[in-house]
Length: 462
Image (cartoon, rainbow, N blue to C red; front, side, top):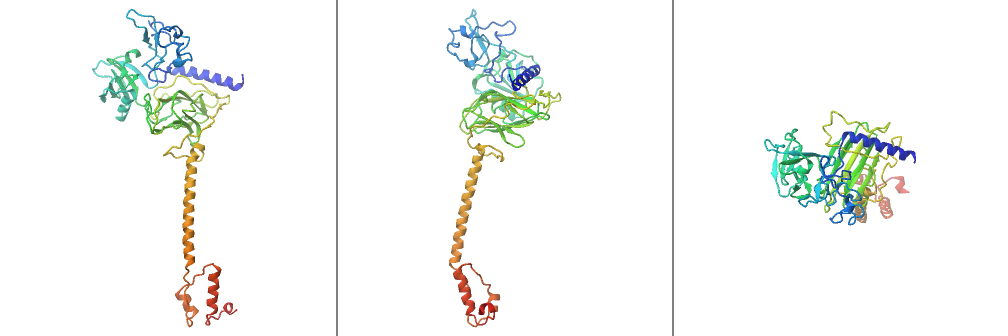
């Protein structure tokens, strides 16, 4: 095993240990559809054991129907969410009332930005700011409503109620198990929107279009997440970590439909594209960038919608390739709220990347309304090619018009006539003569000078 692979494994282990000490999440989607953990009972305390997925042939989800690991199914009995329900679940042995499955209460399956499930006794409410109800409520609808009113927190209850606020003691009435916030959102039955007397609280920075990140690690979601991103989105996020020499980007979730919608990682100083991903070229590994300033760019055209992405970033120091420590004082400009769980590395022993940049093999469609620096790739040079051709065409038209005007002017030269007795001095002072550089004109000029008897110039006499 070569030294680079050994260094990458050691670094991945170091990062995993460091992240697990600070963060505790194995899910980056609102409903835990991406959960691949190993909990095999419905609750850690007093829960019922799960049945193996390769032994549940009498039920809709089993390894015979899904033999290729779809939805995380396999010869195991870990909780999964293969049907896009509001949270991971598993089959259990039949109870007396005929129930053969149950949701799993997984403490480590809580996406960053989801602050938890809390009791609501109503006096006062956990969030005492704005309020609305809707029969089309989704998580992002509520978050956007509260964000537009400049609230930091958004809470959903009973599937249709949305609460906003800045209350730091939103848990004043006590915490509740996550399985008590399983009422589906009226606008999206794959999302949890609280429960009866239970409110699920989110940070309003989730799903924002753009932001500034300065902490050593964080999670960035596509705009409108966990809803589908809307058409015509153009978003920028800056990740600038002072003291970092390497930034690692791990796309924990990626669902973009085609090649016109894209995600780019750009150098923050030169705007050079370092990696580009789209529906045909999804990220397949961690991206290593040897810089402390990176811009994450997202573009969607005016026709497509999809679930989007979540990307986890982590900053490393240069010398010992060690992760940067979190700042205890925090950063007011940092839009990250709940931080990531783990990250792998492709760096070598000297801090350089063994896979420094992705090779860009395809160029996306042109992106309207965006300014690009000279160092961009072929996809962006298409616009400059069009501009150059347009400029060349304009110059050609101008040259043709100028040539036509010059030709018309030469066709009808106005050379002043000289009367026989007028002096040359009077003519030159009253009417300046114009010489057109054509042989016929010069000859005519000489002939008129020779016929002028009052001119005593030796050049004319000869």
